[in-house]
Length: 354
Image 1 (tube, rainbow, N blue to C red):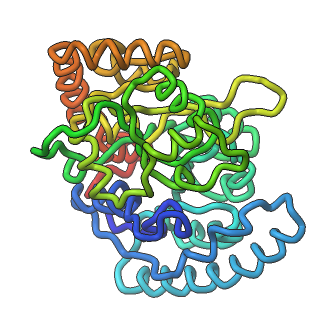
Image 2 (cartoon, rainbow, N blue to C red; image 1 turned 30 degrees about the horizontal axis):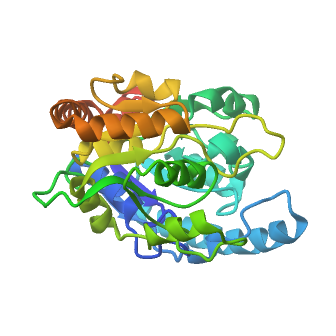
């Protein structure tokens, strides 16, 4: 297929401007499948602000920016379509990126349209305006499929994955016991502090872990001592080979103020860590068990106490840890690649020819 591809390389241009996460996980697998990709040339940096259309101030700035993007998008796709017909328009867009009418105009050119978006678990409002304009929406949050249908969109359940040509084990010395790479928010600091309090050796890297605490105490000093800055993409992958246990957390965003359970979702990390050869110890979430078998391919915890207990257990039982690590890597590399995900959704769309 000839695909017009419109997506930023980084998931967060302000927090992780050097990252090429979406280039590695979306663009390159499409190329691997033999598709001819035409890239949309545009600076996506400013679109990390003013994403919420419910805010009058943000919405006006959003409308101004998406008018600019829409003009450039139509100009570039019309030119590419004239040179040789485009079969599919593939994007990672928020409503802040483009007016829905622009997507409909692309459809009127005879081009199928599909949007990938992976924050609907707690930010569906950021995409629901444009979702109905597409022929298809790729949705990794199973419990949000009904919300897409309710606004008139056509969702296809497409779970996240990883690119096996990029996420792979490395022959490196194992330096750390328990590691986590990712942002500091929600229930994550509480879990990490519990490990520290129970003398489980843990190290963390990522945005906000090294920020000064608002009300510093002894535990915050210990947390700061085991924290490091955000890692670049290649450093992240190598870290999966440098630790005995790699942690994952299913809860998203900040903890609800009313004390209700946090929203959980399957994450990109749930596939990239096992695919990179990590022993993966992850917060309990039932949907993830559809992709990995607990205690055979990954291990799950459902409380801070269980996290500490299982960390100590598997640090003390390297043979069991190694068997689970290898099984998880085999499953990820055999079944949970972006190449296989795209083949599946294109079959659903009736567009599987390269």
